[in-house]
Length: 214
Image (tube, rainbow, N blue to C red; front, side, top):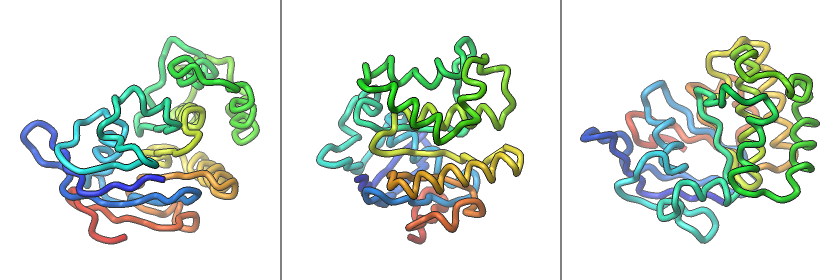
């Protein structure tokens, strides 16, 4: 599904990632585990095209994502949940979830939305509320739901359990278990694997911008 090799990324003059290699086979849930500042977010942003790669490949099927325009990643069925949520304040919860639909002219999105609401009934309950009316944990769920809307083939999650109450983190783990049971392809980045260890088919440990185990 996703096979990354030799990935180098700089931010300004500073090298952040060097020779990163990992793969996420179809239907698996893999972890990218490392301390804050290890390079997890930089890796995910590079895969999504938000940061330019200096070298390497990121093969998604038969296409190298590093050669695809960033705005086309969602068209390819890749969903990304950023750590800081990035919700649109002026939109309702459901409108935030539908942003990928509007951006990609997705067909059959009603079925996808119904599936998401079935997976995350709590989000359905506050779907008509303003996104800024929610708690931080609830906003994480909305960002998760939006990523699911786009991520029909691959889901990238950046610190889904970070900065939220334990009850929300536990619920996030339950949702991810359901995704695993349904055979979704997922790469989740976490500072530690406390909440996801039992779900992961494979873990990659990143330190100082390089994979050291996995």
